[in-house]
Length: 425
Ligand SMILES: [Mg+2]
Image (tube, rainbow, N blue to C red):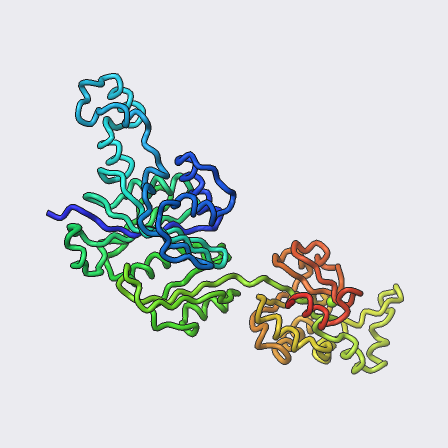
């Protein structure tokens, strides 16, 4: 009768979250954290043999002593008293164990807290960090069943980590070569509950996990990894969709054959671009160039008729359709859009309805390729959240913007050349 399970597990999260788990392992091993994720990882797997160690991957095999209990130590009472085999000989200990831990003896305690009868080793431990994203993965072999309770325990220890697993079919250790590559199941842990997936070849499992995990998190995570079939490239619709949502590709990892998943994969690492809002009047648009095309007669009509002696030329109907781009503006936004997620954020005069539609027509005419459906017209620019706002004036919420205000036309940023220099170098 088959009696073993082979599982691959991975914890995903920010480097801080992974570091938090590693520090728990260090603490339980009576080791002192160095404060650095990589150094702490090396410390924890110190007795393992490094297969590969490059800029982004630390892979270690045969980690002696790194076990499930490294992160979840067994209470001393189970080690001191053999209540598994002789509960009658240690009635006080047995009673206390039952009351305190709900299990009598190490055997029951393991079944309860690990989901399997023995403590187990972590093998082929890999730490990978890409684009603000971190993964700690490993293989495990367990008796009888996969260690669902241990996964739940890890999820409770560091709730911000995504705990995922795949479980390969039953086999006897001697029959490992007969593995079909088909998985019994895959799944993940959410809020302390195991969510099991479907039975399918590796790539399908990955798709499932990725879809399940990221469906609700797409708008909140700044970095993502997309796993695609190995014949994919950047033109894959999923990648293209992410690019249209303001992400940029920071790394690619095509792997022709991932042994453990029995398939090839194309890993695409994406990171959210920084967000820039750009004003129109006297930033993208040369206001005066429009005014120059208006007759003196019309201008006179929009001067001083408010009784304050101030011109309000921006109320002239059609004025905004006449304006020319500012020198260098068109080329600059094309360059910025390669690195940044760009939007137009402008205000239109309240008393000039044609200005609202003229602004749209202007954007379509000159830079519709960059700002397709990326035009925001508002008198409250501070309600938009991003990294930069390029604007010539502090009014309409600009001075309260939560990112950095780049004041166009100031001594520091007199023109587009200086703005592009600042943002691209
Ligand atoms: Mg302006």
